[in-house]
Length: 135
Ligand code: SF4
Image (tube, rainbow, N blue to C red; front, top):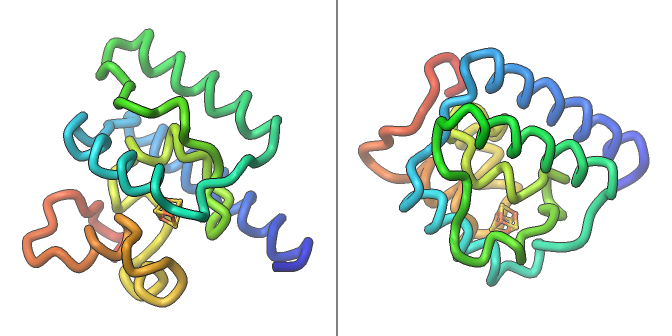
């Protein structure tokens, strides 16, 4: 991935985050976030990322926790870093509803590994976590 592609990924990520927070920042339930966490923890794409995005992620997580929406914690969350495929901060991404991840079914199947929760969730027959307009 060249620099232009990386910057585009971050810009897209910021837009996706704004959409999600603008909609109220509703999170997936903890069991689902735990499933995602467990998958990411075993994935070779869970790698150290940008210090800046880490700070932003922590700030957003703290804000959501303060809002009392949900206890944004999963077992092993401290081991989540940045996804090397999409440059997303995984500590936050595991709580984002599928429709707000900015990854549609085609991208999930073509760009992410088969074991990743993104294609797994997109390919579930009765997906309950899809945001209208994102599919
Ligand atoms: S590719 Fe999927 S499973 Fe791997 S770190 Fe990224 S989001 Fe997690």
